[in-house]
Image 1 (cartoon, rainbow, N blue to C red):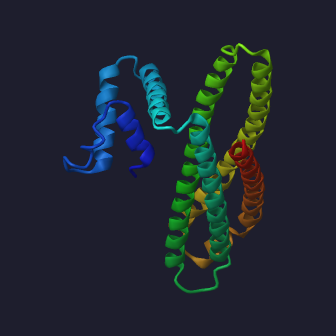
Image 2 (image 1 turned 180 degrees about the horizontal axis):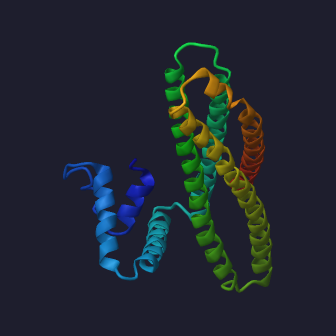
Length: 253
């Protein structure tokens, strides 16, 4: 799926954003083709060059936004909001997946194949929500690194000791709270796979065992899957609460 982030990256790194859709063809394919062409030009040190390219593109994007009056702090707030919203959506999706899984295991008759396809579709949506959480957290890490690096460098530019010390205190407090927030987000992220792995297994098993006896045999898995979902929900709710507090503090400064 083509995203705003893709378009921003494309433009910041020299792509013709205005002509993106003008030349026809699939936007997704054009973006992938553009990435592939840049990648081919960097061989043989492709991995190292790709890392440098992404860093350069981020810097170019932040520089462009700065000229438009949108500072890194503003971008950070937006990305923390996006990460919070992605976790909220993922939490609801995993609760839905768990409810459907319990329903299938407790199957009492009817269209078993139809129930399997519903659960499979729910799993795919859960995978997508999990990927969105990871992507949003990564975006927060990217802008926070740029923000704190810039802030730290600027501390040495003060002539006034009083102002420098005040800025240092604010830097330390913000960095500490951000570190706590990121740790909470990472704990929630780490809980995604323990939920997805057994769900993948159950759906794969059901694919070739669509009969009531085989499905009933999955009942023992419900307790462990539910426990993993419960832990995921707790970690996500904690991260969401911390994100709200972090956003509120940045917005009141």
